[in-house]
Structures are given as C-alpha cells and as structure tokens.
Image 1 (cartoon, rainbow, N blue to C red):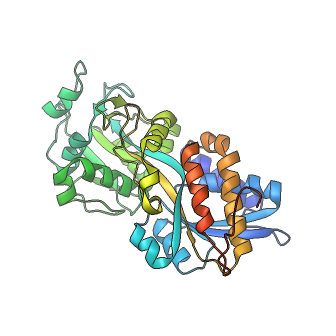
Image 2: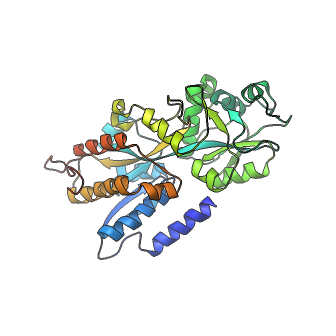
Image 3: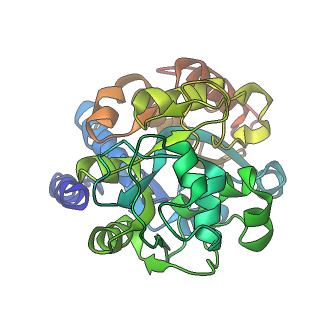
Length: 350
C-alpha cells in the first residue's frame, strides 16, 4: 500500500496548496522521487507554521541536478551524491537530508519472512548468473537448518534509472570485483539476465508473481507492502535485519567528518548493527547566492525539518540523520554566502 499511501499524501498536500499561495513566501526545489513524500509532509507543516510554501518537483535525481545547475530552482535533490570535483565545477554545496535502506525481497515457498540470510557476494553471484538454484552450496552455507528448494533463481532488477539502482549496484561493486568489472555501479546498468521492472512497484509485482524470485526495493516499500525481506551479512560479519536502528548505525559509523562535500556512501559501513545497503538522499544548493533572503528561507526550512520533522519521517518509514551529522551539516551551511561574501544563514532563526 506504499504507493497508494504516498499518492493520498501527495493529493492531500496538493489540496492544501503545497505549491504555494499568492500571499505566501515560496521556495522551490526539484529532484529525487524517493524523498518527495517526506519533503511534502514537512512543507505542509512548515507552511502552516511560517506561511512559507515550498514547491518541489519530483522529477528524479538527474532532473534535480540539471535544474539546480541551471539555477532554475532554489535547491536540487539527488539520491546519488555528486563527487567533490563536480560540486566545485558547478559551485555547489551538498549535504545529506534523510536516509533509507535497500532490502532484498524473495518469493520462496517454505521460507519464513526474515528467515533467509544472504551476503553481498552471494547476491552478486545471483545477478551475474553464476548462482542459479536456491539450494546452491553458497546459499546453504549461510542458512544451516533452513530447507532450501531445488528451484531456479529468478533475479528481478530495476529497468529504469534510479537512486535505488545506484545504491544497490554500488554495494555489490564494493564487495565483489567481478560484479564491479562486468556490471558496475550507476543509476542504470545492464544486467546480463533476469526480469526488469519499472520502479519499486514494478520490481515488487514481478517478484510477487514469480516463484523463486529475488529483487531489491526501498525498505519503506517492502515494509508497507509486507514483503518477505531477508537478513544481510554486514561488514563486521554479523547478520542484521533492516530497520531504523540498523540504518542509523550505518550512518553513525560512517566518518562524515572526512567526507569532502559530504560525498559519502553508506553501503558496507563498519559496525555490528549496520545495515549494509543503506543510502542517504542529498540536497544541493549554490555556494554563491544572488538572492540571499531566498537562500536563507531554504536553509531555515531544512533546519526546521531536521529539528521538528523526525516523527513525521518515521511515520512515512524514513530515517532521520544522527545529531552529530546534522551539526556538521549546519556548520557547512555557513559557506553559502551572498554577493557581499557574508553567510546567508548563521544559525536557527537567523
């Protein structure tokens, strides 16, 4: 019901004037579809409190990068962070806003929800076409005591370009050299076999009607649709289940302080509780602002969201950034300046 739930939210927000009203201040953004529901929810609550509206175009990470680069919006949003040299080239500032996880879902008769255990190399072998049966020794070794059927594995992947694809393929490229060489990491890649579905809903539909299927979807989608997701072996060798605690552990154990431009991917992070396929979604703004008052309003909105939006995020199955990361982010905002060289934002309520 995730898509239905989020569609209702979008409709409700639109009915409340999410795009703004004539007598309200307005800020604009565009980009990733993954965070749209929570940005919309935050915008609705923020407008009620401040009379400042936000118009966010949910057009995908690539579109958001293009629009902020062209300065047609006040901020862009992307699930794939830009590298420091890309930020420098375009005069952009970047930071993580919320997190989620990618989970493996299976359609396997006789296997209970959350019972199956997998690791990155085994999943890579499946998507490379090297591991083709569910009772393969590589899977059986990870699952002593679990009866695995002699059934063909049907891999399901995203057919469209997406941040979910990027996080998933980056993880497998990090843990398996052959996957990195033959398939690689990107928002869109060529898989050698399997079934392709558009969006989380497409992957879920194919996995749901294909016996022996395995696919990957965002955690919120798997949770709200009661899909059978697996445990994963993480960087420290522990098997963990996906939830807010394990996503937060991945972010907290990541060393953001050494990440230039906050370019840091949360896959395969250390820590016994860390979920290995965790990802953040990022905000992009220009460092040099021609409209400092507008830029200040944008940063006030995101500051308010960090401080007041946690419960709303949890209700929609997102994970908020840890406090120590928020502090680093807000310190970095002081490098966003007006034409006079002065910071447009110096602290809450500035």
